[in-house]
Length: 212
Image 1 (cartoon, rainbow, N blue to C red):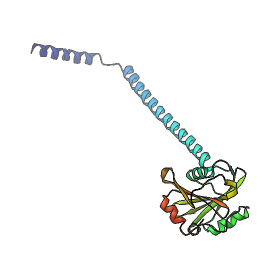
Image 2: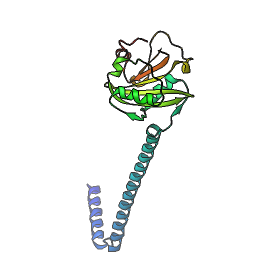
Image 3: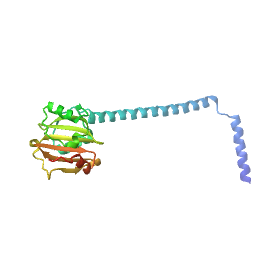
Image 4: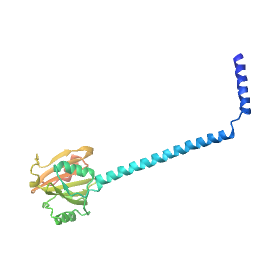
């Protein structure tokens, strides 16, 4: 009880002192100005962070654009099967577009691309997207893309230009990353690679009725 009485008296004295010695107006103004300065600093920091994030996003977007979209190169080298898969996975860069696959093949032949007399019938029946001729280690390769629910990419080259590629059986399938599969075969003096974000059964159905 004695402690409580002393504490209460101390509180009362403190309250009386506050009434007599109230903080001066200039101190209150300085405190308010300081708080406003802190708020402005926080806002500037937030603005800086937003601009920094925007700049980082632009750098990333430009990097992706030039890496995957702006690709005007027509010359490649290396193993055709692996590079064909990488090329398909990144997104094909095409030069001629048409929904009619027959017109696509006619355009490729006009670019001095040697195509075989027969291509997979079901592939030809799909909705065309486009094509592109590529130079490959001094040889010529054509890519034809069609839409069959997913995009199928067919690479066609002369067999003699890729004679080092060994095949086991008529069609050879290989499952790749991210749900992709490719198939390779040789026929009519040509070497073929078919890639798609599909499974082996899907590629087999696309090649059904076609004999190498």
